[in-house]
Length: 205
Length: 331
Image 1 (cartoon, rainbow over the protein chains, first blue to last red):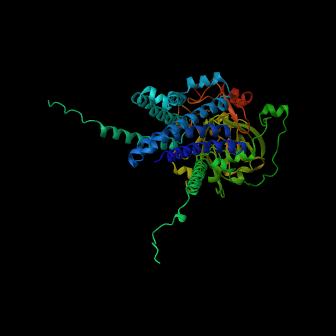
Image 2 (image 1 turned 90 degrees about the horizontal axis):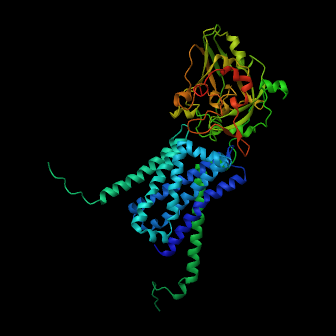
Image 3 (image 1 turned 30 degrees about the horizontal axis):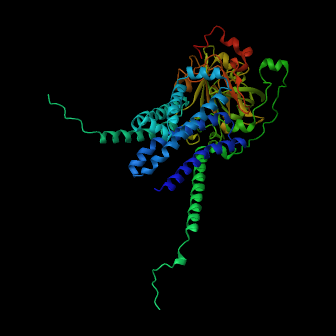
């Protein structure tokens, strides 16, 4: 793909990623977020975080399966969107659910297991966002950078567990995320095993 | 003179400026289409933003007795002196897993629910067991308006003007035996009419229970309406329980059977997760749900959060029922 086309693809991701936020703001302005808008906003921003984490995880499998090498260039923006919506999700929890109380927010973070997983996902994304620039990739060196960015797996898994744990009884939607992530991780595991150099034959006993 | 048919004349070649404009034009189109597709996908997954749910029209209930807010009635707890939640919110934000686990979807799935020929069986440890036609139950006592706070275990609350009467009036008519210590309720089991029952998310039919003294308390009502109108299906038509000092899930909906029993009956949510939902399920800001805080609540229609009150603000009326009980153990 040409440089210009890549830039256009990035623009597409940038614009589409903002659509859910725009609709959320629009609906809120028109009082169309249902009876419990606070809950709806928290849930939706969390869902967007998981969707973007899943899309980020899908980049490498899609690239290899379909031979679309250029999609790798969209990964940074997808990952940053996951972080962006994750931050919004946390800010909504702090402002709407905890009524701007720092004490009560900290208390909930310490006490609630499902929030441990959510915070893990969010905190893990902080160094990934910071080191997402080209300059940082250069500074860290490709290999170290790649190792660090494996933390994205942790964020995705922790995020899905966080969602699963706070659902009251109907866990079908969280399980959809778990299923999709499992397929993506399964592909990577297979890919890793395939590419590994054959182990030296074990000595016969 | 022959002309080479395949030769493209220079005047037919698109000028570079036009070509690039066209490309920009196509790109703008792709951009707009992608954004629109994203928006449509978002709307499909999140239908709430498309506007209010289905319109709800039910008949008016005649001669509902209302209690003015007076000191006496505040003491009875019959009329909460707080702004009532809108009819629209009460009729479009429902936890009723028999129809859907999505609170905004229940009204849609319940829209065609019919209650014709509804019968309620009152049985078990009573002198006069009876199968009531719905109309006969509604004739047991004149309809009263009870404006109650309703606190959901999930952390949100409403103020609902119910129409109903104290359950004690029905119970005294069937003459409970002294061996009756508890009362067990059961919802309709019919997956054709209640599509949510096709999924095994809970163990159907929904069952609930109360201790006899809780059931006989004047605040405990059988409700058949809200806002002076017949109860919409999504709110538990044709008849449901309301126990205002307990979490909402204790208020079993669309009741088919009421049975007086000697032992504590099993209850659906407690069956599902015994460490999270107890038999008593009294509203208690000091005893958290294992996964979330119960100290505050989101009152539907308000912006900030309210502190949750002990026994949902009915401590004066019902606190004595639990004197000496460890409410952390008996949550």
